[in-house]
Length: 237
Ligand SMILES: Cc1cc2nc3c(=O)[nH]c(=O)nc-3n(C[C@H](O)[C@H](O)[C@H](O)COP(=O)(O)OP(=O)(O)OC[C@H]3O[C@@H](n4cnc5c(N)ncnc54)[C@H](O)[C@@H]3O)c2cc1C
Image (tube, rainbow, N blue to C red; front, side, top):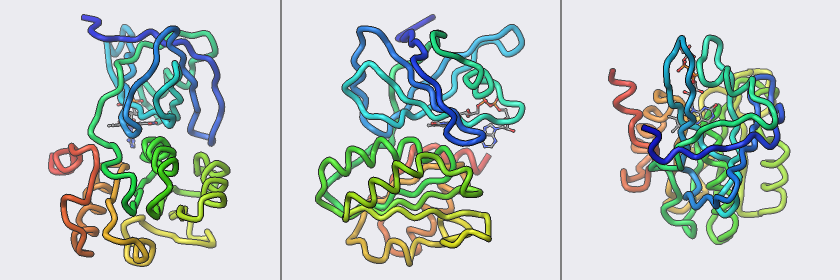
């Protein structure tokens, strides 16, 4: 049954990195009211795969008829490959936004901890956070190489124009002239200046679980640590 499916039209596409494509989707006559950090589910159907739904977190906030998605293409992937083949004017069905990741207290110091496309909800949450402009925020964003960084010009412009935002890239490319290795290895030095922050984590399940553990070890209480919430189960399986 087609439940609450919305019919969206591709209004624009843009290559963010060699593997990540931005898709601007428009739903005529609809105004999105999601909470930044939530995701939509894209419906994909083929003879081979049947019907599948995959979640994608808009990088934009609510209040318009648009969803801006940044989709990484995986080798052998189903929905991500199909989305990369979409062009302007194509129709894509999406379930309305839902999910557990969202800002709890925009006035409090915050740590945004992301790897890969885990950056997407952070972009929307950062926009909301900076509109409040009261606490200090640190974004630690892990990727493989400089070429893989999404939205780097936007992030650099945001940190240059907001003294209360620090953006640091953590790359596995050891020739990077900055932080290298894993995001979770940089928590002490990167977050040390924050006052009892809320920490928001998004990335592959193992990264989320490892980062939660490192934050607990550093003394952050559980009720200051937020993620989608299903990652521990994905790692245990
Ligand atoms: C809450 C949530 C929000 C998400 N938001 C985004 C987003 O904004 N942008 C985005 O690009 N993705 C996002 N994802 C991931 C997305 O939902 C899909 O899992 C991804 O696009 C792969 O789907 P697929 O159908 O192409 O691959 P599948 O057909 O499911 O998998 C095929 C193969 O692709 C590879 N693969 C799939 N997923 C991964 C992965 N995460 N890491 C490494 N290899 C993988 C594996 O080799 C797998 O065997 C999000 C996931 C969640 C849970």
